[in-house]
Image (cartoon, rainbow, N blue to C red):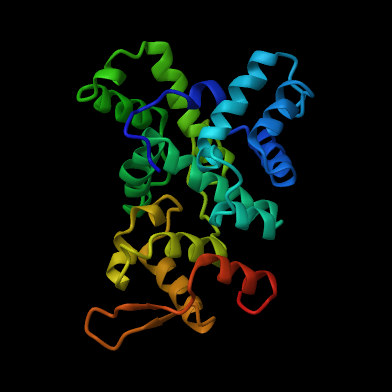
Length: 263
C-alpha cells in the first residue's frame, strides 16, 4: 500500500477530514466511482467554490482510500469497517492509518522520527526536527532533492498538520505530544491486517504500523491482554509466545464488536 515514491501531495490536499468522510459516505451509498465523481464535481458534494479544487481533492482521496475500487465495488476490510462502525473518533483513526500507509514520507516520518522521540521521552516534535527529516531524505532521494524551499516548508507544515489533526500533538506552535487513546477495534484491525507477519508478541512490539499510533510496549501489553480476554487472540505456551488468531478475519471481529460481544 505504501507508495515507493516520496510525494509532496500532503501540502496540496492536507487531511481534508470532513471532505473525506462525506465522500466515503457517499461512496458507500453509490458503490460506483464514476457516479461518485459526478456527485463531487458536477453536483458539488463537498461545496467547493473551485471545481479544480474539488477535482484535486477527489482524485487524491480516491488514491488514498479507494485505490482498489477502480475495477468495481469491493467490500474489503476498509469498506466493511466504514459500513459497520459509526464512531467519528474511531473512523478518524482508520483514515489516519490509511493516509499514513499511502504516503511514504508521512509513514517514515512518524515511525522513524516521531515515534522514536516519543518512545525516548521527548515532550514533543519541532518544526526544525521535521525540516531536518525532509532534508535528510533529500540527500538520498533525487525527487525530494529537487523540492524548493517553499515546497519543503509546505510539506513540513502538512506533515505536522497530520499529527495535529488526528490528535497526536496539541498544536503546531510549541507542539507537545498528546497521550493517544487507541480503541481496541483499531488495534485488532491493524493486528489482523498484519497477521501474516505478526507471529509472536515480539513481532507486535516491532510492527511499525503500531508505531504510527505511538503505542509503547506497555500500551501494547494492555491491548494484548484485552484481546485475550475478548478471545480475539490466544497465546501459545512456547518460549516465544506465539499468537493464536481466534477469528478468521477482521470482518468477523467487526461484527462481534458492533454486536457488543467483544470490546
